[in-house]
Amino acid sequence: MSLVIKNSKDSSGDVYGIKLTSANGKITNFIKINDWTHKRLGPDSVMYQTTSSPLHPSDAIQAKLKVDSKNAEIKWEAFAKDQKSLGTGKVKT
Image (cartoon, rainbow, N blue to C red; front, side, top):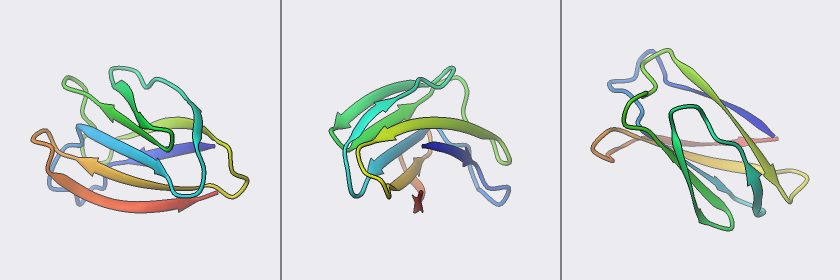
């Protein structure tokens, strides 16, 4: 599964962190995103963070995940530099 993560042009701030959580399966593999560190938070969750290359409004990055479910649903949450939530949502495959 490949996710394109965009920072909305209407966003009030840059994105410094993105948490991806599988709602109905385990994340079995995920790739590194340039200039972002990644950390597994559990079998169904991954956190990407950066200090030097935030997503500015209208920017995008691509994340690739493998989930052990055929109809995967991924919940996402974006964070500002101070770890304040910038929004949440979900994506189905």
